[in-house]
Image (cartoon, rainbow, N blue to C red; front, top):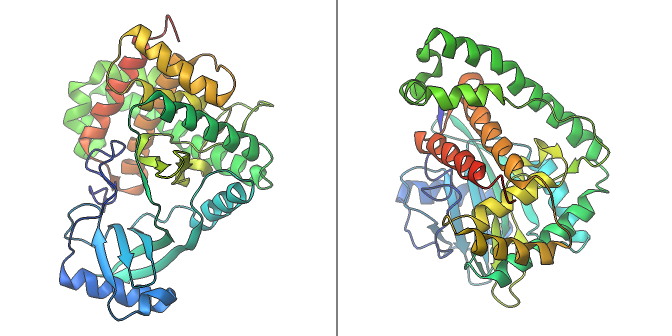
Length: 347
């Protein structure tokens, strides 16, 4: 059974990032294994005095690392999640070639075994950047980058493949609705495994989520490839010019919809992070919209749809794939849905 540890989530609270300074030493046994793997697949890692530090404290091999030699520094991600690393690399390389600020993947999803378990390793250049500082300038720059990303992805040559992957993914989640609905109605909470007590305590909200259960994205002319998860952990700002750089396109294979999805995701996670008053929120949205280039409708409803989808996705991962997310993630999406509902009269 797999567990989404804090290391696999990058930061303890997932999409609320800390500093990009990789301050932590790693255990000697993990250092030795990571160095051996890197030495086999990445020429700079053969340097005798390779330094490896982790983003967060860890006692396991899963994590985000900074590797450094006398000639340079790189970012390394190790995860038990397979994902679609080659497809993610193709998306990022395509965007980079089109001038969209991204961070190209140097080595994609190298498979290895550690303690009888399979892991995947990815290497990228180490960005010299920071996370969101709360300013309207950062919101403007995020809007600009996301607009460029959407324009480029609307012509992505592999969009049919993404559309089919997304449809299959959403059909799988949609099929789970009957199981969840029956369990709620019969109060058979044990089907939710580790989440059973949480589901019982939040049964009214879960019932509403079932009523709004995600279905495969309808075929619309404006549907396209997207990023899928525009939260603060997936945007890094260049220290030199302040440009917003998009990272981690892992969810792109699951979300084939219109651009409202990414825009609503971004506005909730960047503009509404501290429960601002209405006038402050509208000023922040205006700064983002100025960079993006146009207004996007139905933000509040799309935010709620995203919260319900992500809740369903967490249950899907646990029931069908035996991957456990922290219960705090369930609490987060309840809060996000309720937060979005409060704004439905003005965004």
